Image (cartoon, rainbow over all chains, first blue to last red; front, side, top):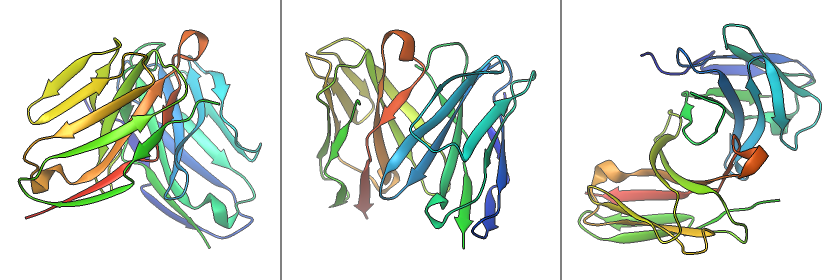
Length: 113
Length: 113
């Protein structure tokens, strides 16, 4: 099986712009979670989708949003980008409804100038 | 809020040495996972420990879950340069939050030849 894929791998944006990141989970996986990784804060949970429904959201402002499509692919969007949004954004997929075994993609490195 | 603290934050050792990294929390988790992340990649799951007091071995790596399921350790014997990477522990919530991982900030291990 192919692993979790994320596109694009690298992205450079300027403050105030918006960005959309994409994640394709492993075939058959229905749950997709998003995380933000920075050197200072480590990996922080953004949100998780299961069967096109957001089940929970982390402590991020409303500028961060996401969605999941019927084929389980997921996108996350960040509007009005700030310098502090520069980070590695990781997507992870899970076979079932439990988070016990998550498979991570390589991430999208977002740089905000 | 469940928090996981990892120590040490950085560790640089010579090939052949032994090391232990720690993961501590004031919260109880249903299970705890250890990941290794290499530059440019997403975290890769090494092991999941579920039962208090559980010990799991993966070649030269030994993982232990504390009796109270609040802490864990990772011991590496005779470290090799290929062990270099960021080691992350992650707690899996219980009940309705079993899809969510809470990560520590990681231990960056460098094994010098």
